[in-house]
Image: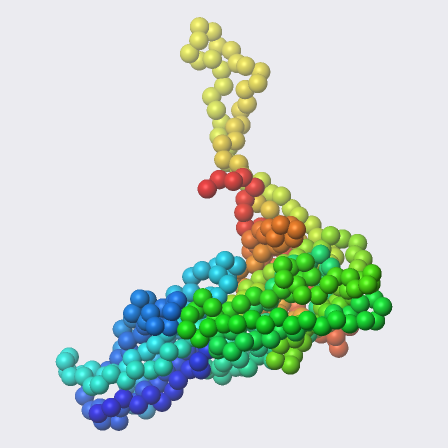
Length: 382
């Protein structure tokens, strides 16, 4: 008897969605027959497969005689780093299949290929084992949208998947107020043999370190620029005048990397105190006479802190933003870059849980409001 692998995932996978293998051995007959899968998961060098977590999985044959293994929960549990601190949040995994019955009878190991998993998810109606490389912007790890607005002082970056080994060229084309254009290319290299070199970051904001275009050309200002890879481009239009101080937010998208947006319209910050009180004993009960001090209080605070929220408003947007706003609503990692000069961020938790998505056909002008809890209390108490 020999195991045959019938279904395999793609080389690159999104770990939060099903990663399915199916195997078959047509000769089984025992009611105690089980398919087995020894799953290895690791980071770092491709050759370091013995250094990571190992799981032993078992499955009884289904009604068709196949054993179906979804290994995504095990793979996803190994992706624990914050995306903000881990540029390349990637793991390798490799299955080894066999069977077992009557407690001790086994067959020969069938070793699967080595696969890659990213800290992301597929969306309906994508198929099981869909590859993220089908995204039109790939190897840029974003869903766009194709046209975005940005400030000349903005920082920001895009992630580029470079784990397939070949150099990836990211091109920049800038347009200036006198109608002239300039062109630049960033070439980023990666590695097929180490998870730490599978994802690189390239500048997306005009003041991000390494941004390859000049902000002025012969005295004329940069008005817009495109970032292109693999034939698809994202156009960034520079906003020159705005009434409110924009709030720049970044969040982990479905590829485990970051998208960015400026909330250009009015923003409001709320500061709410949280306290516990007790009633202290008033008066000099241990003295020769009963009296009290004028500064004594009948209500004393003993635990006091504050929570903070920020409410932001978008400009009027095309409906192309709806897809990435859905990813914002379900993200588990979001930040406010409140000081771009020093690249300082504050963690946020999105408080908005319901959003009525609009379309240009029905609503003409589209504008959204989001509320975030600031993820750090006012007092630095650890």
